[in-house]
Length: 587
Image (cartoon, rainbow, N blue to C red; front, top):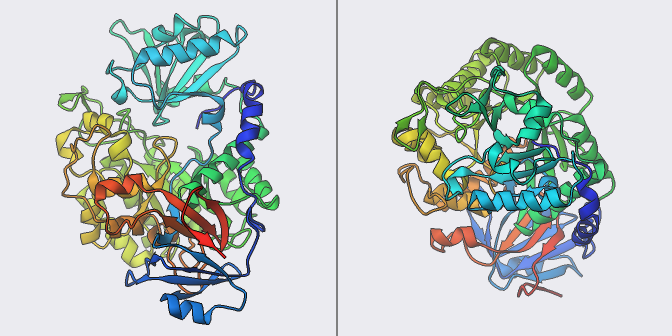
């Protein structure tokens, strides 16, 4: 994830402080107070239990679900003085879970927001405005641009930025987080010139004359991003608190945050101690690219409880480690067998991407964590990368059979038939090898994905129907800030498989229905947070993490699912979000 200048905070401090006034202090207390006994009645309760049961009402005591059933049954069994919330026919589900979210809105709060631009000139104008308010030499940073959404149909280049910010270094991160663009000032600071060589596992984009265009991919970015001043602790905290509030407003109560560093873990603990945490966090620590970095990460994890053990009764887990096997589908840096494409049908020369970590070194890193009982989730987009990851898991599990480490394959975009067979076996035999996927890729970055993967690979992108047939469980996520985080988009995209422009270049043969899609954001997702005995379904004995919606996702047309509105969110039985003007009422 990119870092941005501390100086941005001074310009936004008042606005951010005002925005955070609405963030509830809800772990250990609630904006509406705590009730030891609570019942929800007159709803459609989608339990996501083993039978996918539907009920009318739920009883809660001290944050735990005690009963699920009919209105009369729950009312009669309710404790004297229990608070009653009338759902007025609204639909309740388990709180939704994102199993791959870079958790925090700091970049959006303090940087140039580019996710909504449709022309390069719009990005240039936003940079011009920032430059007018900066001193010479101060950094200008932003994120979220995507050439697939631009009418120019090309990257933003250094030359575009130089004309409005010649005296400031500029870095604009792409929405995928795997490449970005620097202006000439930033390139000079980084020592990048025509004579620069591509670093290992990195690409310096060049024009026809061989000169850098300003676009840097994967490890090539580090020469620039290492120079950008990091966010302050206050800015990071503001971004996390804002994200928690916005998650709750979308009926979301848990996230898996991949690739964190120790300071972020310390911040999560601080927020939990301050009783400000309203989203469960399962943190994956970044394991680096070498055995030395892996050993350092292992040493840090040694002092933390192993999942499902947690801090704050399931609120914060030191979950394990994230590693990178390859790069990006949109950036054509992921490791594949056959060359990438440009513009859907034009081969990108002989480019088949590259591994992020030397493959034998990766295998030794995973072995280190596996032998020490640490959960590993590995970023793997390309088919060749996925094969290497699942074969690594299979080899190590054969050497040291271990149940329940639940090693994951992050993204797992285009698994080969071999990989699918191996994953099915790993899940069945070892409780491992789980795809941790992001259906919103099909939508939000679907245009650049379709252009890069080509028709044959596009049809097997995120093969959910095949997973069902092979009895492979997967979990859903957003990879925010790559795509917007509301899980309703992922539910819809799992079914529709449409790009932002309404096209279906990925076909519909791998679509699933809302029942499977919801499981991937609830009970199957809870499994990948080691919390399936606590959350993920609405059953007696589980924590009352509940989202209430304005319509029934099981009966509305699939096209309406992306437009669902959350009206009430509970975390452990406490109200952490209530929509204004909702008909939901309480006594």
